[in-house]
Length: 294
Ligand code: G1P
Image (tube, rainbow, N blue to C red; front, top):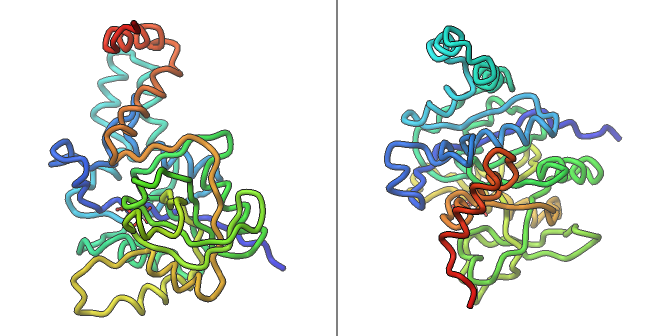
């Protein structure tokens, strides 16, 4: 058969970021810096590494600085040019030249499923990737690439999961699944943010998906016009699971959920420790903060 070709990645970024308030009162959570870059830049870089060519931001009117970050800033560039800051100039321009950006408005904040549905006219009839703008993964093979390979091999939609401790399952979508190979599962059902006592597993969705366009029909069916609750992507995925058309892959690598302060702080330290310029001083400052062992 024909190998599934994934070109576009939908990145929903319109959420309120209530978990990160008050930092996110006026700053999009996706723009919170993780060491030298805003969180969302890591997502875009992951997509580029996986050869995805178009980033579709599903955005809200107050958060357009996210798109601006991936555009030129001519005023800043002229200052850097004039003051001969060539290295910074290069870094600032590089971000604008990274990738093709398509922007779609989510005019009402009706949840992740609704956000994905907003991208329907752009994605059309192609399989596509989706990554939430604040859930970071780092590994030698990008998380989304790990999913693309399985989606292509099996010609099916795939969600990325990682094991989390039981007390954390209520923050995530969770799969009810049967292991069919190394790191691979057939998804029978899903639960969105279940109480730990009733969770089917501790395999939590890490905001990475390869979706086939039939997800739009499933979401549309759920989207009754008078509904006031959020339309969950997980609910659309349940419909695919019921048809036996959904796999899950246990992703390898480091995962940082930026909406969780411990993960956010750890991500900053993780990158700081990898940077030769700051590593030694950072270790020293951290040691000052930690109580001396007896
Ligand atoms: C969303 C999804 C959830 C998933 C999570 C990953 O939740 O609804 O299933 O586990 O992203 O980050 P949110 O964090 O938007 O509440």
